[in-house]
Length: 297
Image 1 (cartoon, rainbow, N blue to C red):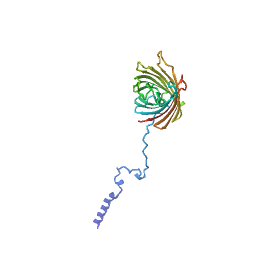
Image 2: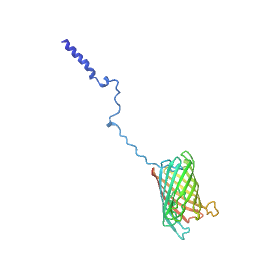
Image 3: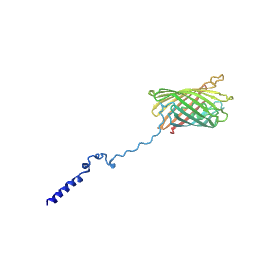
Image 4: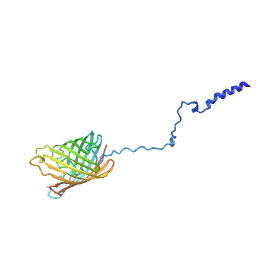
């Protein structure tokens, strides 16, 4: 009887390690995970896709950052009694594109269509961006291309400056090639919610028979931020034909009012009322414009 009892005792002692928990018989294994089961974990929604915001209204750089592409669509109405023998009105549409090519380098191009009269009504659709003298006031506005380099620019600067070159093609009837050079400048005062754009632009018409051989343009545009997404402004400046020549024309001083608002992070709406020659002609001509600016990339 002693032999079977001893055999049973040996079997019990041998089986006890196998019946112990896995953690006790494998102390080198890592402890169990403290994460709750999948059905108890909170559901985290994915963030919404970016809406490609436009640069700020007031602290917008002089040249767009690399990779940013903006489109500008405009519509304008022009009225004039000058040289028409009576009241004269016309409509026009404009299209401009701006692209940031690299650090401090921006490409602009644009054109327009005019209907009804010889007035360049498309220029009023270029709210806060009318720096090109449009020759050949016919149905097609001469397309132009402009390359700008801002050698002083950045969000930390209150003053920005650059240089640019312009080429305009003679698509319209009775027009010619023209080229131009410019020095754009900008003052930004964020504490006062103020941005001032100006510069000096000189455009040459490459035609010996042209009445206007060159145009000097000195715009002054002031934008005041009422809120983060809404601003009002003033457009003025001086434009002179045949500047620095004996047959120079009188200097036209323009005057206009501008409103601009951001409706989404990537879309802005603008409007303006402008007198293209407040001096010396007064209210003999004026224009209205509306524009949509949006970021395409």
